[in-house]
Image 1 (cartoon, protein in one colour):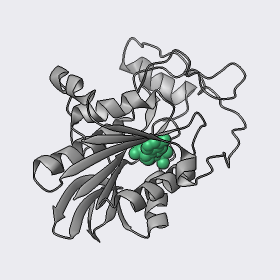
Image 2: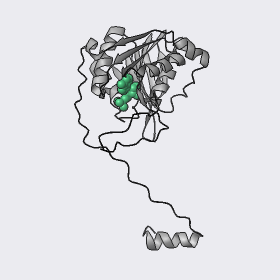
Image 3: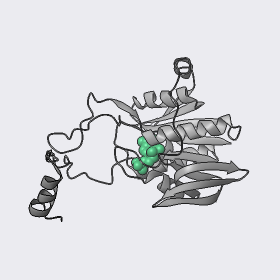
Image 4: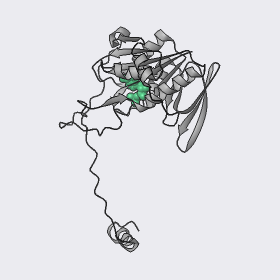
Length: 249
Ligand code: AMP
């Protein structure tokens, strides 16, 4: 079984994101970029399936600028076998990503596509669902556990207030939630080995997909500043404040 894992290059989750002064978006120049954290979980899950003998090949794919090669090399260093970069300098919206992934799935015929549940830059949470719709495949979103048995996948999903288990026929789409696994760090020898693994470069045109934006960002704003906290001397002061100043008691 082949597994396809789409990985997106995003602003590193530790970076404090700054809005551009004209409000047209967020500052990305000279900002540390990394693999989307949910996609690291997706790569880890795919590699574990390979290590368990369930999968034979893990293919990582990224749609983005030349620099997204670094993200793919990280996936290769973690254990993916080969990578595909679909090169574009445009901001590619989830529908266009899903259309490109559909074309790649048609070419590669994976049994499973494991995506992150959402990219932490656009917070769209759309690509996996759109890809499932375009392919007409079943989807197990927000996966907390993935079990493959024969031609079926059993996916335990994180839902409000609990867990839900669904059974899907393969091929299928899975999107990862935070508690699915803890991604490994790539070791230095594996980082070196990853440099020699195959990485193909394509363009959206190769797949006949027009990536022009359908949405226009009207403005981007910083969240309101939080007001400073206050240290009180004792419980009486706290009760007085809650009762007489804040009006919550
Ligand atoms: P989103 O729908 O944008 O929140 O993204 C959900 C998931 O789709 C991500 O976690 C990735 O697995 C995948 N994805 C989105 N955009 C890209 C991209 N440009 N390249 C590769 N994978 C992507």
